[in-house]
Length: 263
Image 1 (cartoon, rainbow, N blue to C red):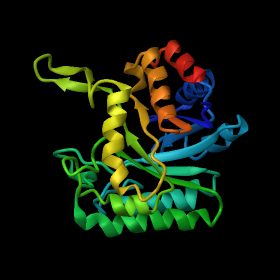
Image 2: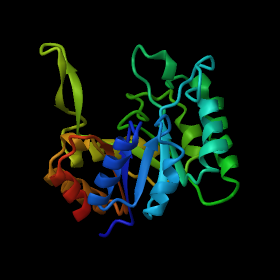
Image 3: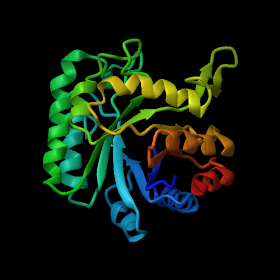
Image 4: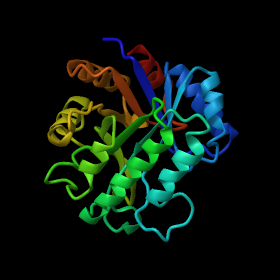
């Protein structure tokens, strides 16, 4: 099955060199949509440059939950930044990333009391789009919506305000090894595209509200070309026509970009 959209994500794009590499990698991988974290210094100016290359531009962020945080990090200020600055600059979509890490209260969304903030967040962005076509999505941990995951994240509010859902069905990640005292590539969520997607699909489906579920591949700098092909095959089994790749890094190998292009 031919994919109608291929999305390459990036975390840090803070200078012209970062943007040049990202552009080159996106083109080498046959990417038509880029998804850029909103604290990248190249935003919002880069939106028009990617448009000139014929690419759709989305943004994403794991926003904060503490109002005293400065800048656009706090969720409601983040939403206004998207609505008042990025959308007028031409942004085509935004994906929110509510998660929860132990010991990080600044962005811990695993709290039921945050449900009204989640709902207002989506409403602000939707209003900013002014009725024009604009994707709003939600991404989060592979199994976070499950009762055994992070169930107090206000998924119902985020899902309700979204057009599509993006479980992070990564099968490998850099994890800190206490013995080696450094981060090392570690299999997660079963260690294969098939197993990670199976787990993510099971966790996200019950509360999806009929929204499309679009599993993500990652971390692609740790993947093999065969795993990229396997990821594409798993999407095809589920009739998913959009492929997402997290994330651009300098060490993403040419064979990975070629494998993405071949999907």
